[in-house]
Every structure is written in C-alpha cells, then in structure tokens.
Image (cartoon, rainbow, N blue to C red; front, side, top):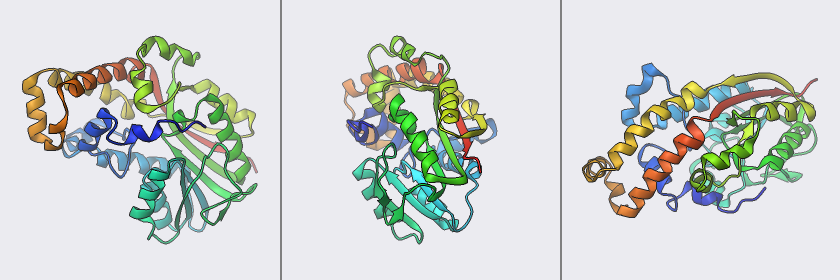
Length: 299
C-alpha cells in the first residue's frame, strides 16, 4: 500500500482538514452518523456524531471481553482504547507513524490497548507484542480507511484479514463505496483531482466488487448496511449552504468570528476551500454510498 501523502490529509497541510478540526474533528476523523432529530447537536461540533458512528460500528463487531481485536488503521487511537475498555486485548495499528505516536500519547496508558506501525495489507508476524499468525485474531475492525488502500490493497487486506481471523471470527469494514461498477468514472467527476488529492486515494471500491472479493477470499457476507442517508446525505444539503457563506467576504468574517483559529487562512485558501467543497459534492456525496460490511469467517 502506498503511503505517499496520506499524512497530509490529516494535518494542517490540508485546508479542508484545518476547517474540519474547527468543526470538531480531533480524536476521530470520520464523517459521523447523523439523523434529523440529532442535527441540532451539530452546533456543538461533529465529535458527538463521530463517536456515534464508532458505537454503531463496534456494535456490529460484537467483540467480547478477552478477545483479541485488531483495530486496522486506528488513527489517533480512540476506537482501540474503547475496545480495550470493554475488556478486549486491542491492538491498534496504522501505517502512519505520526498517528501511532499520537495514539500512544493519548491512550497508551489504557490497560489492554497496544499500538504499532503496521501496513494492514501486509502485516508482520508480531506487532505491539501481539501475535498475528493464522487464526490468532478474533475480530478485525476497519472504519473509514480502506479507500486509501487502492484496489489491490483492498483485496490484499481482505485476504490477510481472513487469514488472521480464527474460524468464526468477524471483520467489520466501513467504507465509501462507488455506485457505478466502473470506479474510474470518478475521473470525470473529479477532473482536477481535488477530492482524490485532498484525501490521497485513487478510486472508491464498487460495492459489488467488495462483496465479490470478500466471498472469493473465503468470507461469508453476513450484512451490508447502507448508512449513506446518515453519513453522506446531510453533507449534500449542508455543503452548498456552507460554500455560499464562504464565497463572500462577510460570510468568511462571520466564520472567523465563530472560529478564530481560521483567521490565518488567506484569500487563496478560502477560494481553494470553496473549490474543494464543490468537488466533494460532485465526486463523493452524490455518487458514493457509505457501507458497513459485516464479514464472517466460516467455522
């Protein structure tokens, strides 16, 4: 899996990420799970919705105390720590050393939580003191990260995860999935590469190909939950309003008064941000699904 540039998707080198941090991104970096009754909570930021998405994802994982759980692409470690506090032996791994260092700083003190730098498409035999041999893991969790892997990397991840899981084990994989069976159609929708460049990925996996590959490597597809209405649809409504605000000087001033940390953005930064927001509606919000796959390794 290529790691070139991925770190810059989640730090201040990305104008969009700087704005998202001010909207509540921090411990977590996912789109969140929103519903109409809970939308007023968005005034306090997106963190509550992100934690809600984690709760829903982990409910599908159904990890039990004492089980070995691999939290693939753990980011800053929040989900790994949550699993450890449930009594699991949780190993959070990420390909970015910066993220693993942050996870250790934040959650390294939590009993049962360990962290290591690992490429989950080609895991080592041991990581963080946890054995990663055939059948050594009870559960694997991967939340909103596999789109970075590339098509070959996603296939490798599914195959390696199947190998690592014990019979009866489970993988919960939550990811963006492409509605069109041809993933290269994103090129026409993102001609300047603003979405792909912002998040450093090549294409999203078509859902049918995800399901076919999972079956090919030996998984039984227990469920494929469509969380699009709660993860993406609300952004489709909110982003056009936000971009209209940011397109005016008065609107930007109002945003800076509300979020002073954004005062350092230049006029060019704001213009770029508006272009990036438009590209996300065209190439992510509308043509994508947001899918939670529950994949079991047969006994």
